Image 1 (cartoon, rainbow, N blue to C red):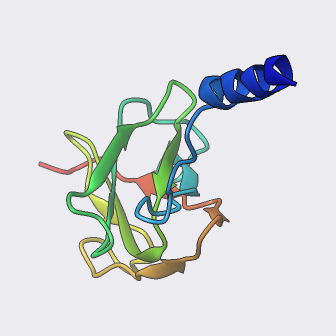
Image 2: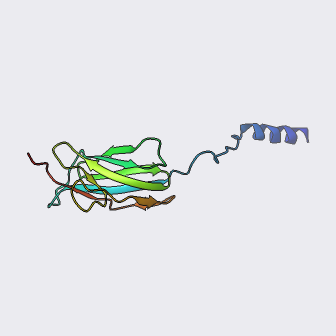
Image 3: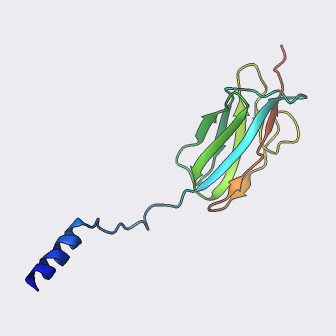
Amino acid sequence: MIAAALALAASALVQAPARDTSAIPAATSAIRGRVTLAGTDQPLPRVTVRASSSALKTPRTVKTGSDGSYQIAELPPGRYIVSASKANFVNATYGQLRPLGPGVPFELAAKQVASRVDFALARAGV
C-alpha cells in the first residue's frame, strides 16, 4: 500500500504543470497570395508584402519567393490592409481601383486563411 502511494506521488511529480493559455491570443489566421508583373503571369520575386492592422503592434512584412507567392501567418483576427512594394515598381494596395489609390481593408476572422490576396505590379516610369 505504501509502495502504491509512493508510485502515485512519483507519477504526479513527473507530469508537466497545466498551462494557462487564456492570456495568449489565438493567432492562427493567415494571408496568402501571389505577386506578378502587371499584364503578364510572370512572378515577381523579392517583393515586400506588408499587412497592417490595429490588432498588430507593428506591421508584418514578408518577401515573395521565386514563384511570386507569399504567406503571412500567425495573425490575430482584425481588419487588415495589405500592400506590396518593390524598387522600380509602382506600389500597390489590395483592392485599390487605380494606381496609387486607396486600398480596401478586409476582415480576417480567427482561424481564417485569406487566399488570393494577389497583386500585379507595374514598372515605374521615368
